[in-house]
Image (cartoon, rainbow, N blue to C red; front, top):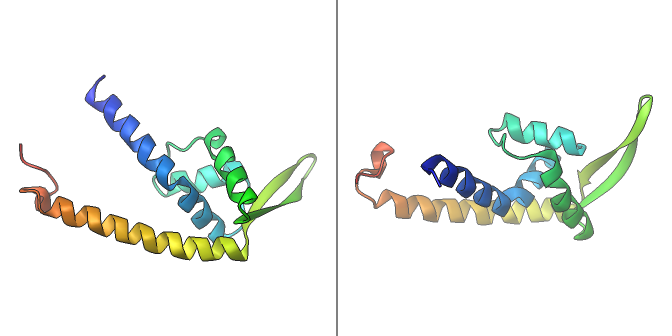
Length: 124
């Protein structure tokens, strides 16, 4: 395995851990359908999220009552399933965002203790 392969695998694992939070956040902007969410995530710098990979997460968030769906006429094509936050979803987004901030702060504090990290690189 190359260094680049390892980095891609690590990034994918990290993203899986926060995908639910990111999906709630992009839906907080305004309701969206699956492909649109991947575009919003890509515009935010998460271009590695494939449309097919978000549907299991969306289904789970819907089953948990954090998202609800509705259909919109596709203008000649099939209707599109849109997702929007529920009140429970808004509450989860607030709580998970707080938890994420604490985690990021803790990781940053640990990394700041590594010599050379303040310049953006860890010295070997």
